[in-house]
Length: 353
Image 1 (cartoon, rainbow, N blue to C red):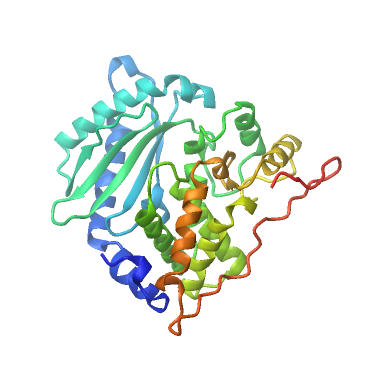
Image 2 (cartoon, helix red, strand yellow; image 1 turned 90 degrees about the vertical axis):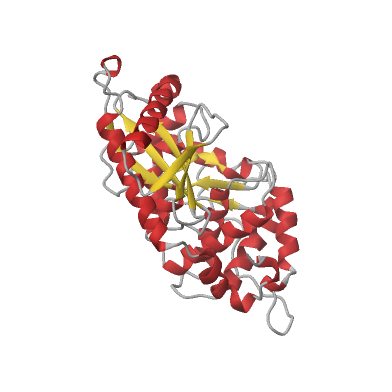
């Protein structure tokens, strides 16, 4: 594959079409396989007498496959199993490990019994919080990495509307930052899935850049997805836009990470006093601050490696992918580095920058 760094800015739409657009046939095969796996887990998981009474309430597909941002040879999917055994966030933490062992056993059984159009392999590095597999095409080099996670059904019967604030109050009271984000997979999915097609193309482009520069201990890919959405919301908001300008804006935000303060109020806001106080404390932390729109306890600005990622961004900003035909630099959109915060009485603007 051609390096993004050496591809002209005027051809980034073509770069996306030729190198990043996923193989539709494989995606359809993968979706069918994952649907079969989900159905199998719902029907067969926890059927032994020792697990009697435990049910899979629902399985939610997240990740790039669920959001509609899958890439050629670089897709991922989250399969989140919401179980009735988890009555709270703390229940999820206490019994997660033994639940994962049972899910793994059933997945191995699933592979033997189902005649899938793809085959899957388990990764060799165990993580007690998640099962990691890879789906492979039988006909090409395409693959999708997917994580299987058990979770507490915090949202209940999700109706694609703003959650009850008490859900977030209970989350905040656990004192755990970002540990229960899987409970909000449906919100994370909804935040992206209905966005305009070209924004999803830009997300793919940014994720490809992330893949080109990736090294150990840098911020998670999801943080860059959120920066991309923010750049588009604040700088364009249009269904059609200049791809190079959008990409350059994301790089510019990363370069200026020490000033970033970003949050959204789609699913939580400042009306509940407990949530309001918590948000103000979160937004008063040392920058960068990038809150998960679905989980206010998850601040991706606290991840390690923003300095190294900023160096990569500065490097790419001077290359062909960010230069016009005449050699001049592509200008980023006019985007604020920090969103305004309604501090309210007793609060003042934070000086921790």
